[in-house]
Length: 532
Image 1 (cartoon, rainbow, N blue to C red):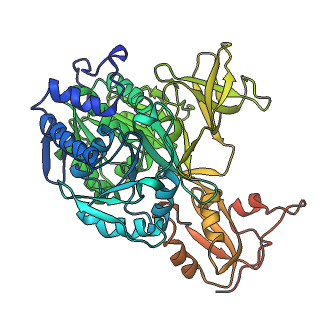
Image 2: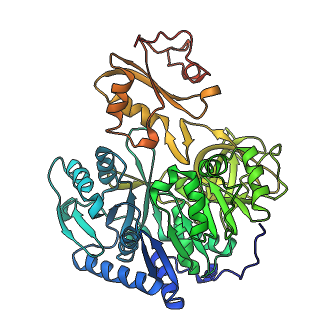
């Protein structure tokens, strides 16, 4: 399969950057009113239809009191109506926060409180769960609601006098919030401006050569930053976003069939999905014939499988994208067709105007290994805690002598003289699992909060259990009982693979929990497990 030649991208150049995400949609509605913009759940929307629906819903929200800078949660399964709700909140000047309907109500309630969400936009299918989460956020008080168009509903979570203070510019005119794992057990709201997201969306539309004829396969949850390409890069170029049914992700063979049936031309996914499509999905037997660009990000790609994909795609560009939620994708690397598994894979260089630096323990740029710092227009404006923003960035002097506001990623890497970056792991307790960044302290905090647990330690395993998360707990309860309790407070993606009841946790000579011993290949021999 050879990548076909294609026309230049129709996305606006950097000098034409409309900045606002909803303006990308409006621009394509003017230029390509009859082109398909969004498909999913048996529906098809042209750009003119989609923009009109967004305009009408945004006007209603504004007339009913939604003010610029207000925070709006969108709590609904991924359907065209959910996309309309996100765009309408943005057009009304609000900060839109996608929420996962699969999360436990208590965790969603924490997100509502932490981000200071004043409204929830939900759907018929998610209305009951939205009421439960809103009630927990309001200390048991029910939320008032009313019906909107397209099967959407609105719940008023905070009264006007309870709303948090105004956000700093430019997020006082709206933006985006994505939640990431936090070490205190409270998910952190990552506050992004329109410009943060639009910069990446426009860069990707140009780099990937998107045109109005292209069809973008959108497989990730709206809470995952991969979808900013699916929605906003597509809108920038007038391409069609095709929403993949959520249930297909568990069936790689069905994903492969869907890519062909829907004539998908561009696909961005986590490596674990690509792995499944190759190992169980039969993609080698029937590669999607319309695909002309693929990209991956969120976790490491198994080298042998990546090499097989390069042979299978036969010239179709395959990109490695890197970036924490706080910066969206900030580096890229087009993997050469000649790359082999015995070569080290780089995450590449910063996308347009994004600067990457590696700092040593002394806080100065180093040619050796150090912490990756990111500066530029994709870097977020801070975390939302208790409804108020806090900015963790700091000013860093890069090796070119320029001082820049930079985000410390927590990732360890090295940078070559020509600017390519190579990852070396994490400096903290965060791990990547099926594309999601998970803070082990977040999981541990949830375990420790259980009344049946006296003390616990949560670790990522090495050796034959590599990639698994195990919780060692001093508890009189069994593994099933503890897991059942955790399902009420943690999303499925964060649940430990094992709960190991123990009589005591191992300690180092300084008296700290010996997490290295717990992470070893098997169960540490000096831990006495409680008999089942």
